[in-house]
Image 1 (tube, rainbow, N blue to C red):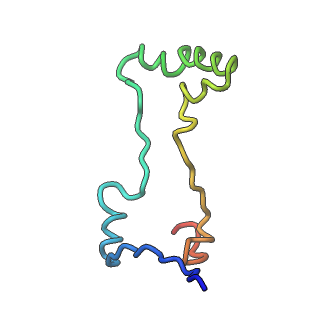
Image 2: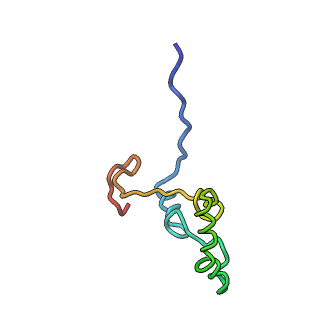
Image 3: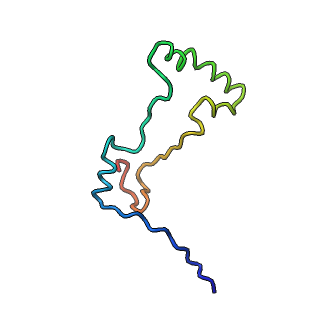
Length: 96
């Protein structure tokens, strides 16, 4: 009879202190939002917002597939939680 047990890769080991330092160092949290375009001049701002933003908006309205070329669509993922189902910990509340 074949062995149906699959070997699991070993989990990395670390101390509680290492985990706390990892999450606290630099800026707390895991994500940061930074600009992807220059925003130094009035022209830059006009291109990024009004009236410049109207051009890609119209292009997307004409061809929705170009949204991937002009927006963050396809380059972002969201993880949204209220803290009630933290993997392996259960409900520890929204603050955690």
